[in-house]
Image 1 (cartoon, rainbow, N blue to C red):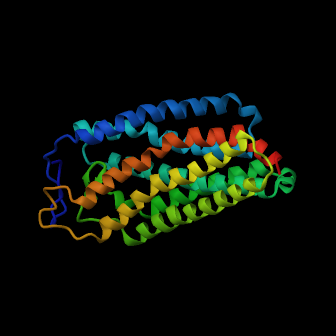
Image 2 (cartoon, rainbow, N blue to C red):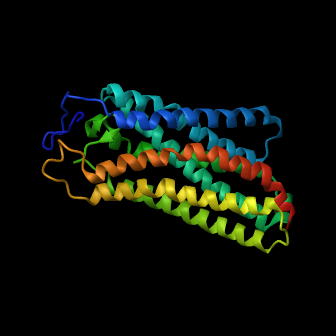
Image 3 (cartoon, rainbow, N blue to C red):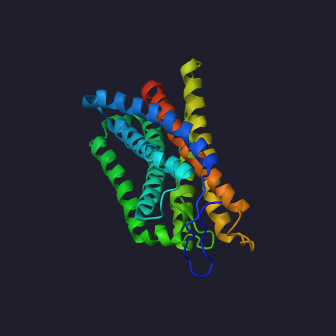
Length: 295
């Protein structure tokens, strides 16, 4: 068992042991994510002279995923050697969740952008300042997340941490912050993605085209929606469960089921960084223009 919080004084024990399971889980995730996102960044930078509004959204998604991946070595090191609970941990937690939600919100923005282009193909071609609008949307996403993080910065204060990456079990997140994370950070984007994806699929199914590309486009849109749901639903359920679940008397010496569930769901959410670059690259770069042209 690693360091533990005192349920009365909120101080921490200096005892710390490794958590090999977390280290082994995040190592392959880091390696795969580094390769996939590195390749995506290289591809986009090489074609930066021909960027469109679509490219802007995708590069913002890749930046969010890449940043999350690049900071995973700290989590791996903590799992094997235990980082001291300092403000570095507060920074690492903020970086992790800011980039996770930047990825979520950018994915929702891409879904809206893709839906509008397929639903209104002729109008979309005549819209002006599309690239500037994409930049503004991405900037708004980052600004919103930084503001929320600044307002609730004390939530990640070292005194509230059990380990560098784990909160004290007797010090749950603020209820208002949880409501923002679940409603604005997950449920709203999920509803947007489900609506836009279902509408895109319906539009494409009406197109008199039996080509393999149409089937591939529908398959990828469906896969994006399913992967988003699978990756991000568990962690938001975990936030709620850990807030409402009662603590057993020996909570400070054992991992509760709710806490273990949250750790696993955090890893599942992080895997989305690997799926994003693959799925959206092929969807928006290979099939996007032809799907629109089929209208």
